[in-house]
Length: 108
Length: 115
Image (cartoon, rainbow over all chains, first blue to last red):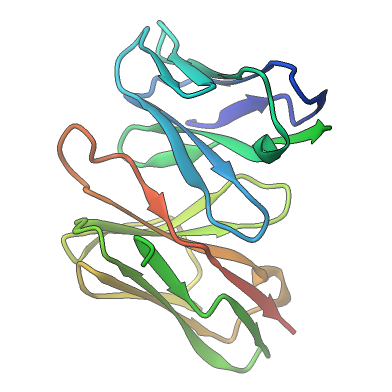
């Protein structure tokens, strides 16, 4: 089906390091989105991707829509403590499907 | 004022209670959604409304009953819930059409505990 496999499940990194996470599926999606969720809050949209191969940046965040339309990755450069949270990928066709999330911990 | 507002933020209810969750969006969007977020599970889509019409019901038990009186308001009526229904319930909205129609904006959620 349209299940999204997001990895890694969790990451523990040092402040200043770069982070990479990805999402794969056996299904093709027309749109890929990346969200961040802080504790006790709803997910916040970070980046939306609409075309295969598209590479989009939002500050220190960069995301790409895989050329096969079955995957996407998110990179965070020079991590800072406020990057802590859970990052979700989402793929959209007729409705939105979410990955299980990557929990990021940044050590000062 | 945030774009999508959910009330209450926290709710504890007994299995025989009836309660309602409320969502309001101030973004001029046409589509609204209910999601359930349980620990260590992906967000589960429950219901979708487009232009006040329910377009999707993802096999949700009838003890959850949505209502969308207009494109700005969405309710989730709860009745005789089970402890396993305890979760964070998230409301979201999107334009529903057009090139950016899929960008969903979420409320802060209602943390529901069924005792």
